[in-house]
Length: 251
Ligand SMILES: Cc1cc2nc3c(=O)[nH]c(=O)nc-3n(C[C@H](O)[C@H](O)[C@H](O)COP(=O)(O)O)c2cc1C
Image (cartoon, rainbow, N blue to C red):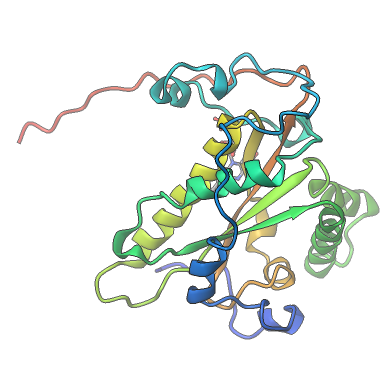
Protein backbone atom coordinates (compact mmCIF):
# COMPACT_ATOMS: atom_id res chain seq x y z
CA UNK A 1 0.00 0.00 0.00
CA UNK A 2 1.24 3.47 -0.71
CA UNK A 3 0.01 4.93 2.56
CA UNK A 4 0.81 2.99 5.64
CA UNK A 5 -0.96 4.60 8.54
CA UNK A 6 -1.03 1.66 10.78
CA UNK A 7 2.31 0.54 12.03
CA UNK A 8 5.74 1.50 13.05
CA UNK A 9 7.76 -1.70 12.98
CA UNK A 10 8.50 -3.35 16.28
CA UNK A 11 6.37 -1.25 18.62
CA UNK A 12 3.40 -3.58 18.29
CA UNK A 13 4.81 -6.75 19.74
CA UNK A 14 5.75 -5.27 23.09
CA UNK A 15 2.25 -5.76 24.42
CA UNK A 16 1.07 -8.54 22.22
CA UNK A 17 -0.10 -11.69 23.93
CA UNK A 18 2.34 -14.55 23.71
CA UNK A 19 1.76 -18.18 22.94
CA UNK A 20 0.91 -20.21 19.89
CA UNK A 21 -2.44 -18.59 19.27
CA UNK A 22 -1.22 -15.02 19.66
CA UNK A 23 -0.02 -14.41 16.12
CA UNK A 24 -1.92 -16.52 13.69
CA UNK A 25 -0.42 -17.47 10.41
CA UNK A 26 -2.27 -17.99 7.21
CA UNK A 27 -2.64 -21.73 7.64
CA UNK A 28 -4.27 -21.38 11.05
CA UNK A 29 -6.73 -18.89 9.58
CA UNK A 30 -7.73 -21.40 7.00
CA UNK A 31 -8.36 -24.12 9.53
CA UNK A 32 -9.73 -21.93 12.28
CA UNK A 33 -12.93 -21.20 10.43
CA UNK A 34 -13.41 -24.89 9.79
CA UNK A 35 -13.18 -26.01 13.39
CA UNK A 36 -16.89 -25.75 14.03
CA UNK A 37 -19.47 -27.20 11.70
CA UNK A 38 -21.84 -24.79 10.08
CA UNK A 39 -25.25 -25.01 11.71
CA UNK A 40 -28.20 -26.18 9.69
CA UNK A 41 -30.78 -24.10 11.45
CA UNK A 42 -32.71 -21.48 9.54
CA UNK A 43 -31.39 -17.96 9.29
CA UNK A 44 -33.07 -16.52 12.35
CA UNK A 45 -31.87 -18.24 15.44
CA UNK A 46 -31.66 -17.14 19.03
CA UNK A 47 -35.22 -18.45 18.97
CA UNK A 48 -35.54 -18.19 22.70
CA UNK A 49 -34.27 -14.70 23.05
CA UNK A 50 -36.89 -12.19 24.07
CA UNK A 51 -37.74 -10.18 21.00
CA UNK A 52 -37.57 -6.72 22.42
CA UNK A 53 -38.33 -4.89 19.29
CA UNK A 54 -38.65 -5.72 15.64
CA UNK A 55 -37.22 -3.03 13.45
CA UNK A 56 -39.80 -2.59 10.67
CA UNK A 57 -36.99 -2.04 8.21
CA UNK A 58 -35.19 -5.16 9.36
CA UNK A 59 -33.63 -7.14 6.54
CA UNK A 60 -35.62 -10.17 7.58
CA UNK A 61 -38.76 -8.29 6.53
CA UNK A 62 -37.62 -7.77 2.97
CA UNK A 63 -38.69 -10.07 0.24
CA UNK A 64 -35.50 -10.47 -1.64
CA UNK A 65 -31.84 -9.65 -1.38
CA UNK A 66 -31.96 -6.57 -3.61
CA UNK A 67 -34.84 -5.16 -1.62
CA UNK A 68 -32.97 -5.88 1.58
CA UNK A 69 -29.83 -4.21 0.25
CA UNK A 70 -31.74 -1.13 -0.85
CA UNK A 71 -33.17 -0.80 2.64
CA UNK A 72 -29.99 -1.73 4.50
CA UNK A 73 -28.98 0.61 7.25
CA UNK A 74 -26.82 0.55 10.34
CA UNK A 75 -28.05 0.73 13.91
CA UNK A 76 -26.19 3.16 16.20
CA UNK A 77 -24.20 1.29 18.84
CA UNK A 78 -26.15 3.10 21.56
CA UNK A 79 -29.31 1.41 20.23
CA UNK A 80 -27.92 -2.12 20.60
CA UNK A 81 -28.52 -4.30 23.63
CA UNK A 82 -28.43 -7.89 24.88
CA UNK A 83 -28.72 -10.53 23.68
CA UNK A 84 -25.95 -10.85 21.15
CA UNK A 85 -26.13 -13.62 18.55
CA UNK A 86 -25.74 -17.08 20.05
CA UNK A 87 -22.95 -19.32 18.83
CA UNK A 88 -24.98 -21.07 16.10
CA UNK A 89 -26.09 -17.72 14.72
CA UNK A 90 -22.58 -16.31 15.05
CA UNK A 91 -21.16 -19.29 13.19
CA UNK A 92 -23.50 -18.56 10.27
CA UNK A 93 -22.74 -14.84 10.35
CA UNK A 94 -19.02 -15.56 10.13
CA UNK A 95 -19.61 -18.20 7.48
CA UNK A 96 -21.20 -15.50 5.34
CA UNK A 97 -17.83 -13.73 5.25
CA UNK A 98 -16.22 -16.79 3.71
CA UNK A 99 -17.99 -16.13 0.41
CA UNK A 100 -16.41 -12.70 -0.04
CA UNK A 101 -14.85 -12.40 -3.51
CA UNK A 102 -11.20 -13.24 -3.04
CA UNK A 103 -8.79 -12.98 -5.98
CA UNK A 104 -6.27 -15.77 -5.73
CA UNK A 105 -7.97 -17.26 -2.67
CA UNK A 106 -5.53 -15.50 -0.34
CA UNK A 107 -8.14 -15.12 2.40
CA UNK A 108 -6.69 -11.81 3.60
CA UNK A 109 -9.00 -11.40 6.58
CA UNK A 110 -9.90 -12.82 9.94
CA UNK A 111 -12.31 -11.89 12.70
CA UNK A 112 -12.06 -11.75 16.47
CA UNK A 113 -15.24 -11.95 18.50
CA UNK A 114 -15.23 -9.82 21.64
CA UNK A 115 -18.06 -10.26 24.11
CA UNK A 116 -18.79 -10.74 27.81
CA UNK A 117 -15.99 -9.65 30.18
CA UNK A 118 -13.63 -9.21 27.21
CA UNK A 119 -15.60 -6.07 26.35
CA UNK A 120 -14.62 -4.57 29.71
CA UNK A 121 -11.00 -5.39 28.97
CA UNK A 122 -11.30 -3.83 25.54
CA UNK A 123 -12.64 -0.69 27.21
CA UNK A 124 -9.49 -0.56 29.35
CA UNK A 125 -7.38 -1.01 26.22
CA UNK A 126 -9.12 2.00 24.66
CA UNK A 127 -8.53 4.00 27.84
CA UNK A 128 -4.84 3.09 27.89
CA UNK A 129 -4.51 3.97 24.20
CA UNK A 130 -6.02 7.38 24.89
CA UNK A 131 -3.74 7.91 27.91
CA UNK A 132 -0.69 7.12 25.81
CA UNK A 133 -1.81 9.50 23.12
CA UNK A 134 -2.80 12.23 25.52
CA UNK A 135 -1.41 11.92 29.05
CA UNK A 136 -3.53 14.94 29.98
CA UNK A 137 -6.80 13.37 28.84
CA UNK A 138 -9.64 14.21 31.21
CA UNK A 139 -11.51 11.55 33.17
CA UNK A 140 -14.56 12.38 31.09
CA UNK A 141 -12.71 11.62 27.88
CA UNK A 142 -11.31 8.39 29.31
CA UNK A 143 -14.76 7.31 30.46
CA UNK A 144 -16.08 7.96 26.98
CA UNK A 145 -13.39 5.71 25.53
CA UNK A 146 -14.22 2.97 28.04
CA UNK A 147 -17.91 3.15 27.12
CA UNK A 148 -17.17 2.70 23.44
CA UNK A 149 -16.51 -0.95 24.18
CA UNK A 150 -19.63 -1.38 26.26
CA UNK A 151 -22.45 -0.13 24.13
CA UNK A 152 -23.17 -3.29 22.16
CA UNK A 153 -23.09 -6.79 23.68
CA UNK A 154 -20.72 -8.02 20.97
CA UNK A 155 -17.98 -6.50 18.87
CA UNK A 156 -16.47 -8.33 15.96
CA UNK A 157 -13.04 -6.99 15.14
CA UNK A 158 -12.37 -7.24 11.41
CA UNK A 159 -8.70 -7.74 10.60
CA UNK A 160 -7.03 -7.53 7.20
CA UNK A 161 -3.68 -8.87 6.16
CA UNK A 162 -2.42 -8.06 2.74
CA UNK A 163 0.41 -10.10 1.34
CA UNK A 164 2.94 -7.52 0.18
CA UNK A 165 4.50 -7.89 -3.22
CA UNK A 166 2.28 -10.74 -4.37
CA UNK A 167 3.11 -11.60 -7.97
CA UNK A 168 -0.50 -11.37 -9.17
CA UNK A 169 -2.76 -9.85 -6.57
CA UNK A 170 -2.15 -6.18 -5.70
CA UNK A 171 -2.50 -5.30 -2.04
CA UNK A 172 -5.46 -3.06 -2.73
CA UNK A 173 -7.41 -6.04 -4.02
CA UNK A 174 -6.64 -7.96 -0.87
CA UNK A 175 -7.78 -5.07 1.29
CA UNK A 176 -10.98 -4.83 -0.74
CA UNK A 177 -11.65 -8.52 -0.14
CA UNK A 178 -11.20 -8.04 3.59
CA UNK A 179 -13.60 -5.09 3.50
CA UNK A 180 -16.17 -7.11 1.62
CA UNK A 181 -15.83 -9.98 4.10
CA UNK A 182 -16.48 -7.49 6.90
CA UNK A 183 -19.50 -6.18 5.06
CA UNK A 184 -20.83 -9.72 4.67
CA UNK A 185 -20.65 -9.98 8.47
CA UNK A 186 -22.57 -6.72 8.80
CA UNK A 187 -25.24 -7.86 6.35
CA UNK A 188 -25.48 -11.35 7.80
CA UNK A 189 -25.95 -9.92 11.29
CA UNK A 190 -28.85 -7.84 10.05
CA UNK A 191 -30.29 -10.68 8.03
CA UNK A 192 -30.21 -12.74 11.22
CA UNK A 193 -32.40 -10.18 12.94
CA UNK A 194 -29.73 -8.16 14.76
CA UNK A 195 -28.66 -4.56 14.51
CA UNK A 196 -25.09 -3.79 13.57
CA UNK A 197 -22.76 -0.93 12.76
CA UNK A 198 -19.22 -0.82 11.41
CA UNK A 199 -17.14 1.58 13.46
CA UNK A 200 -13.51 2.59 13.40
CA UNK A 201 -12.52 5.91 14.93
CA UNK A 202 -8.86 6.55 15.53
CA UNK A 203 -8.68 3.67 17.99
CA UNK A 204 -8.61 1.01 15.27
CA UNK A 205 -5.43 2.55 13.89
CA UNK A 206 -3.81 2.70 17.30
CA UNK A 207 -0.69 0.61 17.85
CA UNK A 208 -1.58 -0.16 21.45
CA UNK A 209 -5.06 -1.37 20.52
CA UNK A 210 -3.75 -3.58 17.73
CA UNK A 211 -1.04 -5.04 19.97
CA UNK A 212 -3.50 -5.74 22.77
CA UNK A 213 -5.75 -7.59 20.33
CA UNK A 214 -2.77 -9.69 19.27
CA UNK A 215 -2.49 -8.48 15.70
CA UNK A 216 0.63 -9.50 13.84
CA UNK A 217 2.91 -6.83 12.40
CA UNK A 218 1.47 -7.30 8.93
CA UNK A 219 -2.15 -7.15 10.03
CA UNK A 220 -4.39 -4.18 10.45
CA UNK A 221 -7.64 -3.63 12.20
CA UNK A 222 -10.21 -2.42 9.69
CA UNK A 223 -13.31 -2.22 11.79
CA UNK A 224 -15.10 -2.93 15.03
CA UNK A 225 -18.49 -4.27 14.03
CA UNK A 226 -20.85 -3.67 16.93
CA UNK A 227 -23.72 -6.17 17.00
CA UNK A 228 -26.72 -6.65 19.24
CA UNK A 229 -30.47 -6.74 19.57
CA UNK A 230 -32.07 -3.53 18.35
CA UNK A 231 -33.54 -1.44 21.16
CA UNK A 232 -37.07 -0.21 20.89
CA UNK A 233 -37.15 3.24 19.37
CA UNK A 234 -33.94 2.77 17.39
CA UNK A 235 -33.87 4.44 13.97
CA UNK A 236 -35.64 2.33 11.41
CA UNK A 237 -34.19 4.06 8.41
CA UNK A 238 -30.75 4.94 7.23
CA UNK A 239 -29.74 8.28 5.84
CA UNK A 240 -31.50 9.61 2.81
CA UNK A 241 -29.96 7.77 -0.10
CA UNK A 242 -28.94 9.25 -3.39
CA UNK A 243 -30.88 8.25 -6.41
CA UNK A 244 -28.60 5.90 -8.31
CA UNK A 245 -27.97 6.81 -11.91
CA UNK A 246 -27.13 4.67 -14.87
CA UNK A 247 -24.01 6.18 -16.38
CA UNK A 248 -23.02 4.45 -19.56
CA UNK A 249 -19.69 4.76 -21.26
CA UNK A 250 -20.42 5.38 -24.89
CA UNK A 251 -17.13 4.00 -26.13
C1 LIG B 1 -14.61 1.45 7.13
C2 LIG B 1 -15.74 2.18 7.82
C3 LIG B 1 -15.50 2.83 9.01
C4 LIG B 1 -16.51 3.55 9.65
N1 LIG B 1 -16.24 4.17 10.84
C5 LIG B 1 -17.22 4.87 11.44
C6 LIG B 1 -16.98 5.50 12.70
O1 LIG B 1 -15.92 5.38 13.29
N2 LIG B 1 -17.97 6.24 13.24
C7 LIG B 1 -19.19 6.37 12.62
O2 LIG B 1 -20.05 7.05 13.15
N3 LIG B 1 -19.44 5.74 11.45
C8 LIG B 1 -18.49 5.01 10.85
N4 LIG B 1 -18.75 4.38 9.66
C9 LIG B 1 -20.07 4.57 9.03
C10 LIG B 1 -21.15 3.71 9.67
O3 LIG B 1 -20.77 2.36 9.71
C11 LIG B 1 -22.46 3.83 8.89
O4 LIG B 1 -22.29 3.29 7.61
C12 LIG B 1 -22.92 5.26 8.79
O5 LIG B 1 -23.25 5.71 10.09
C13 LIG B 1 -24.13 5.45 7.88
O6 LIG B 1 -25.17 4.65 8.28
P1 LIG B 1 -25.82 3.58 7.27
O7 LIG B 1 -24.88 2.40 7.25
O8 LIG B 1 -27.14 3.29 7.88
O9 LIG B 1 -25.92 4.24 5.94
C14 LIG B 1 -17.78 3.60 9.05
C15 LIG B 1 -18.03 2.91 7.87
C16 LIG B 1 -17.03 2.20 7.25
C17 LIG B 1 -17.31 1.44 5.98
